[in-house]
Amino acid sequence: MADAVIRFGDKESRLEVVQSVEGQVAVDISRLRTEVGLTTIDRGFANTAESESSVSYVGGEEGVLHYRGYLIEELAEHASFLEVAYLLQYGELPTRTELEAYQESISLHTLLREDMKHLFEAFPHTAHPMQILASATSALATYYPDALDPHDEEAVDISARRLIAKTPTMTAWSYKYSVHQPYIYPQNDLGYLSNFLHLMFSVPAEPYTADPVVVRALNMLLVLHADHGQNCSTSAVRLVGSSQANIFSSVAAGIHALSGPLHGGANQEVLEMLEEIVAHGGDVAPFVARAKDKEDPFRLMGFGHRVYKNFDPRAKIIKRAADDVLDALGIDDDPLLDVALQLEEVALSDDYFVERKLYPNVDFYSGIIYRAIGFPTEMFTVLFAIGRLPGWIAQWRELLADPTTRIFRPTQVYVGPERRPYVPIEQRS
Ligand code: CMC
Image (tube, rainbow, N blue to C red; front, side, top):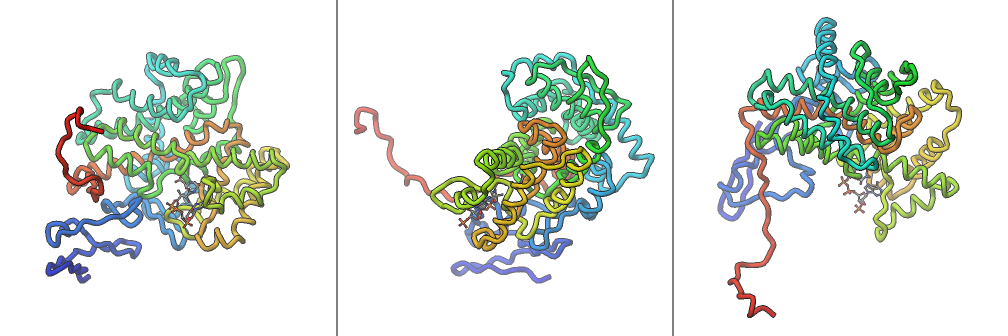
């Protein structure tokens, strides 16, 4: 393909064109500054690719998502979460033997070092579990100093398995601590998600068996969250990783990025918004009016997406599943689901939302299922983190394995004061 040419003044730069598998074309602007003296500005990196990536593809115009070529609809229906985690890590779907070996090795790393209990206890009982999870993830680096070299493939692989194995335990322990219940130890003969539900919801005084309906629903939700191109948290993981910081520190940065209300934190905010609407009598109109009012910072949480300008395919799948899951759990009528459906209908026929192509995103319906399963609202974003973890790790590994990777160091357009002499303090007015 021909190069793109940029002319600025009497200088010219021929920009190499990079072709994506899915049809987009990118120009490599890295020589622009030296050749014609121009830098680029792109707020929110809306049109900037830091690198090539083979992990997942988000097709905003058509509303398509695939992981390494496999469409999300097929994975959500047929694949287990660990199967998807394997696909993201190693690039191919596992054979049965590979999957069994992977599951087995993950189950061998579910325990936390016993002294880590003190870490949980250092937090107030009211602490948000995302803050605890980020701290505990950072702390893992101190327990496994022998496996921190980002260029030692074996060390990276064991750290990746430890992260995937221990995150449900850390998550559940943050919850148990917040509700003053004893920590529950992992049970390695259970599957990954049955074990997580056991860690979360069982108590030593009672037998506990996870409901297969719940396991299936959770599996579907986590598969849908497993990767999503260069979103904010994944970019945070890659940015920190680009300095060759260890994988635990890099993933902890991703957890912090995910906690924000414009990103993963939106799933908690959606549910709180739906509760507020129900508490105000169920009329969605004033909330839609507030979302459109430019003087009001309120936004319809769970609406809009940087990339999707058509329906978010994950939201479609969750919306379809919500009714079935609620039915299977014996919940005949959920006022929050009714309000969510109403809100979607009103918003999608309103010019403000239509013109801006604001559709429900993954966070809009997921909380309704999490809530029906029994998760408290503060745990929703942590569930997103468990889901996104294999993607973060796969993206980090991709970056570190790429010989063309350089430390992320964006430039800036300085608009502060011009150079000026220092003024001694006695002379300042
Ligand atoms: N409610 C009302 N107006 C909105 C909304 C919303 N939810 N989202 C975007 N807009 C408006 C925005 O005010 C702007 O209007 P105008 O052109 O008149 O200034 C226009 O739509 C474009 O919005 P933007 O903020 O420039 O878009 P962005 O790509 O920078 O932000 C977003 C994307 C997802 C952060 C944003 O749509 C939003 O804040 N949504 C609500 C929070 C949310 O649901 N986040 C979850 C995102 S999906 C999963 C994830 O990443 O975790």
